[in-house]
Length: 303
Image 1 (spheres, rainbow, N blue to C red):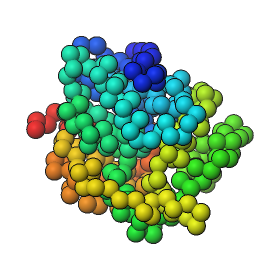
Image 2: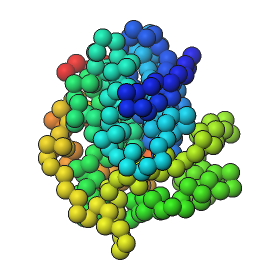
Image 3: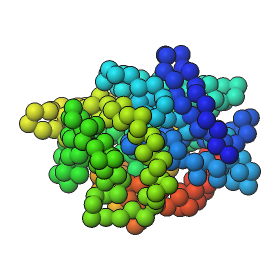
Image 4: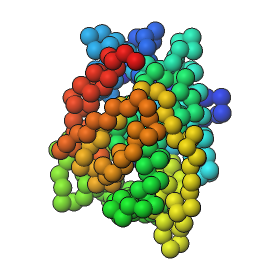
């Protein structure tokens, strides 16, 4: 059974969280992306909370800017340092006696936060699971020099525009539903009326907070009017991940191409990279049993 409650963080941010499993068990923390919300993890949380599947305490916050969590108006409030601070404080609040997470699992923008957190605070987690969320090293390289990824990421330059929220929300969120289905010519069988209703309820709280993640980050293709990533450099020490890491990558993701997994082993000494065929960016919805299986195998491995 899914519980919901609010966690009030020291920086004044409130995160509305979902959870299941016994409170005294090792914690699995799940971070969602755009334009999602914490509910997308309900099936996985119920699975891993079950005693036969680990009996974990599973928690998924709605990130800053989403659903009923705090949504500051200032774009600067969505810079990486603040997002990392939120999750570090949340871990301190939900992990008994200061123990680390059993694992942090994350998708899309949640993964961007997770990469930064794992780099800055590896002591907060035992393992890291990333699902179609690019590590900043390969992303930087691809957006600066790979024409295919630059073209695939062009949508980011729309999402930072002031009219993006209104256009995506118009006609009962037709733009956002098109985003999830891959466009009007494609059909996402997982996007049932029930799932649509869950997304609609989340988006009715506003989507500008989620869009502010794009506005606050320079990691987007350069344009004539926006330098984007063209002059960005990241020091090697900010790219290293020193926790065992599983990267699951849906191969049919049209926005985040498989090239974004190239060179990961240079930054992550203990890496398992698992491609997932016949799946798109929304693989958590499309192939939940595959995600469960890969995560279960990884969680059971000893270091």
